[in-house]
Image (cartoon, rainbow, N blue to C red; front, side, top):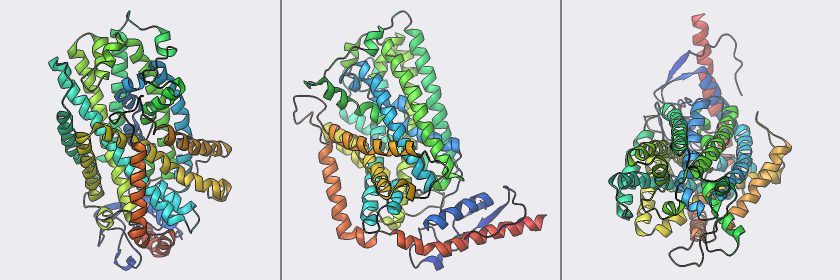
Length: 560
């Protein structure tokens, strides 16, 4: 229970805390735990937020709460980055129905994403925890099924985050190689090895930005600012230089062109939705920073809802501007440089130099996106490892002296490097892994939502963000959309089907699910921490954090 606190508590008042160990607490290890954060000064408000964490969940506070609402939004939108994401798959989407498919696809996906955002925001507000969806599952599922359901949810979420990071890095690698080929005037397709090497180098370089805690909030905010600046500069420049050469309104809004080979235009349109869907994915990013902000109950919903609103506004305007500015669609579709959006810039501006400058803005935005993705996957890995959800969890659950889960970060980036090798071996297999990120994340969102609906929304403690009947509708939409997307996103993108163009995402999901189930029965069910084990830690952890708050009070009273 929280202590009764009297007197003044200036926000600037801090105490120095020292920890005897960095690893996450387990049952029977309370006696070794002296204080929640090592080698840092702890403010009263942080101690207050930490007390709420341990009283509700039984997790040891290990991370500093330095993320403001704006920094959370920076990480959330910096990762989702809808206008930038749609740039990477713009031409692929066009082949599924023409520009109108992308324009209306963004509207459809934005509506679905709003339902996802509201659903995640309600859960994050009610149960803020770095574990996000797997922790909510642990709390909401029937006790008999909670361990395996929570474990499966966490496995899908972390796999989805790693696959997403790999997809962002490969898009960035293709853009950089594409800039080189555009500048050199080389019209040949870049060799796969060039993109692979660029991918691996980028994975190593960008890994550095998530090694220290102090600059991360500033980096996250910078990702937001760079993205918005790039959006404004690119959109205005392309429109201004295309003046007098715009495409017709029918080309953008009504002409449907089915280049997939599917006899059904409806199926072609649905399969093409995966492109705008990718640009609105990863909405759970902010939820995994719940233990790094002072008021997660309100900050996280603001960040998630803001991500969708800004994403729709920027992506909708951006694609319309780009489509009106296309001079020759056939040349764009035949582009070999690996990043056809650069050809759109080139056509609009009329010279390589200007296109390269705009391409640099695009690349800088992708850099921020990649860094945010690393932040997200590291927090997911670390939080899941706290409950022994991964092999080697004793390492991945550690928080280093730099204030971040470095081991979890390095391990996640290591898997990104391995996925890059799959790209070198087969682009078809790599594409299946990347597409899997959408399916894995949607499944991880739906698991806790299903259990919340089964338990009854009125039977759980609400947070400050709660939308009542609107939330119920959103929950149902998310579950139905997950089933719909997993089925239709597994269809081949083009017909007739060959070994080279087949969509193997269903195989990726099946193999990963089989591995997760096998691991659970062989080892996971013996080591994975349950909600009951966490509950046993609450009394002593609460006492420790309460003592810190009382120490701050005494220091304040001594100054009065």
